[in-house]
Image 1 (tube, rainbow, N blue to C red):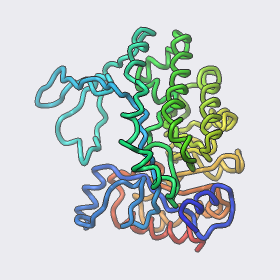
Image 2 (tube, rainbow, N blue to C red):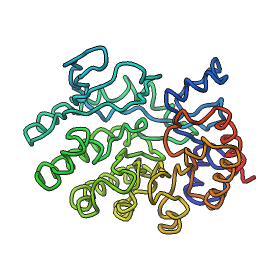
Image 3 (tube, rainbow, N blue to C red):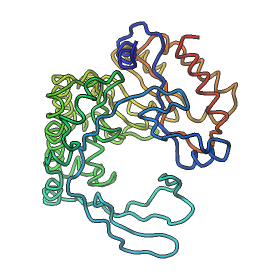
Image 4 (cartoon, one colour):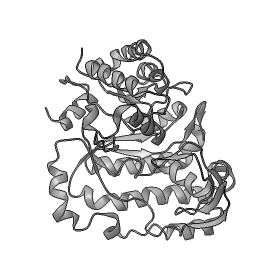
Length: 374
């Protein structure tokens, strides 16, 4: 059984020799800790979405299509001292970042302060749209049909459209343009702008994806949204239904009509009040099922939504920081879902530095047994 067929069979609730063994990654601070605990020099790639042989993870193929800006902003430093810098990044967002003691291997332990965003009016958005030129020669690898496509089509691992988080969703992109607070108001104060944004996001994603979808099919696409916090979503069902739902449904219809088997949504927090609408629009699965959120229990989600909602994630990172007994008990609680199918257990986001290398190794060994039905 190939990795690709194994994934499909799990999501179709068919018998398999084992469930795919996937993980997302670690904080840079976690990597630093683990290297001090004996992992240095082991030849890890630290790209866990693609797979990591050292830990027994299975491989996936992320076809590198660029859905972002073709004309990014110029990075500019506006203010700087020994403690911090204020700068405009390539997405046009003004941020204030601490300079020392925070960044390890590209991960900041202290979140930047977001000071300003590039879109406030319809005129601002008209200028922003021009930064998303179709320009397919810059969005696809050079000579991709001759050099890359044969390998993509023959891959025996799951084939995913775009790198992880590359296929930005509706809330994700609008928040990046306006910021969370301004977006919360804009649904009510600037409805015409919001309708225009949602239509553009669907149209843009369809236009960028169309060439490769004419050449091959894909096992899934992950729409990145992050539209929820610990206690619930950042927009209500009525707002989602009016602005996002019709374009999400249209986008999913196009993707599935062109051979994408599953559409997943990446959202942290608790998006549960929006799940019925997502399912109606054609969403098949969610990730990461963040356990610190109020209602994100994969067992309860399966009970409530049945097999129509596939589940991906759901391992509480906080349990991995405890001891072996706690890790074993937590994984054993997921056994019914693993046995039923439609569920791939992974840590519910990247792994923080309070998890030791010893605990993670135990988690992976124990999980591998469960994935094989032992």
